[in-house]
Length: 622
Image (cartoon, rainbow, N blue to C red; front, side, top):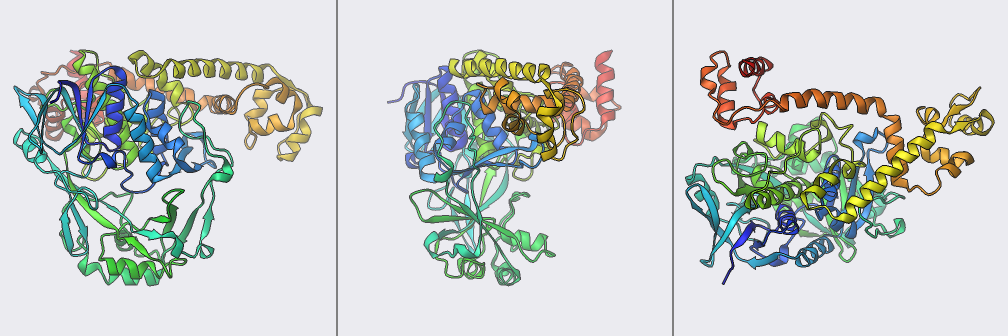
């Protein structure tokens, strides 16, 4: 019934979809197995993509030739560039998505991708012989053979849903959990643990009074995620989100349900996400605050359903309902479904190689929440990398690995493998020490050529990067050679309260001043407008960033060179740490468990001190 595949991807969430697409586009024959073909790429939680640091990840996925950016752009109902008031290293794109359209576009793109087959069934286990995976076994009893397997099981592995004192098996509400895989992997020697995540109630938008809320409109300029020319909605087609707040009365009512809360009564054993806590967790942890912000987000263009971002909860339904009715604008709200918590199995990611292949079983890859992460974007980028590397492995090609200095994706995977996680891992700009280099605007300049050489990024993408690079160079040359006379410049400088020119000055020097932007210079100084005619906004903005932040960028590049010197010092796989008696016991145990490949990796392992790295460096030097 089934041919032999190069690769089987188990699960069709964000990680599974990117894994299947990347491997197939590289030339592997892929089977995507999912429990329900109607829920491919479903947005299980909030209907949005991107945000702080997550937006950078989506742009990196797109620059590498993944699909998430294109799908997000085609299904957006609102676009915002977050943190515009801060430096460009902090700018993060975010879209509000049409939930149904997002999933349907993803499925359409997968179905149009040559080399992907689909099958609806539950995977009960993997087929392993002599430490190598060679396929999967399904609930219907099929044994499907493949050279590699990528597990992207999300929250389905022994998933348990909690609502108040009720709990039942499930991977998402109204969807059954998956059993068998955890037990088999544990028997093969894998370490496993439990995590928890949650979701808020969904509300009938017709029952809300938006006059009591703050309107949050989209940006006038819609940039999007993809570096390809994807048609965007126009600014006036955007749907607004809204902001409201809880209050002391809401908090007091929620507290009356704490004695029925699965979290406080110990029925949930898994750790929840620190940076996306439930509303009951916020009230408990931040008792001094008398209100918390709620984002009222539409689920799409053709639905009245509303997502209440910030009100994630597992309290009893009646408590959720009564508390929501005390929120301004929600006095007459009708609930479509209550919020709930879900507890699931994951596998600590220190058991993986940088390629996301497991250390215990050859040709077996993990991606997404199975690795202890949370978030669509984190899952999608892992799926992309796992799919690429599964293809590379079965084709006997070198693994594709991104460094911390090259991508947020590299930071995420490096953190997971070196530090592990005992709570759902979420990406932030603060996790990236080279965030001035890893901006959202330059992901294509950083990554597309790498992917093109691999065979994933298209010729079209590569041509666009070449053109953009050449035009940025031209813009910078124009600005560094163009002299501005005082009489043509001072009116503009006075209007932005900047000191006037006494003698002529290069345009690039004027641009270095604080509170002065290239867009304003183009609009106010005819000579610059004429000189930069024909360059698009993306090229102009990238040129401005490179000019304004040149000193910071160069400093970070110097730090990268220093860090890479440690990365070049390879530690042999069979290195005997026991003979280094000066090592701390914790460092020795961590080195033996994680088996770092380089001194750089060894230095980033949680619990390892600089003195331990020095001891290792001295010994290797000998």
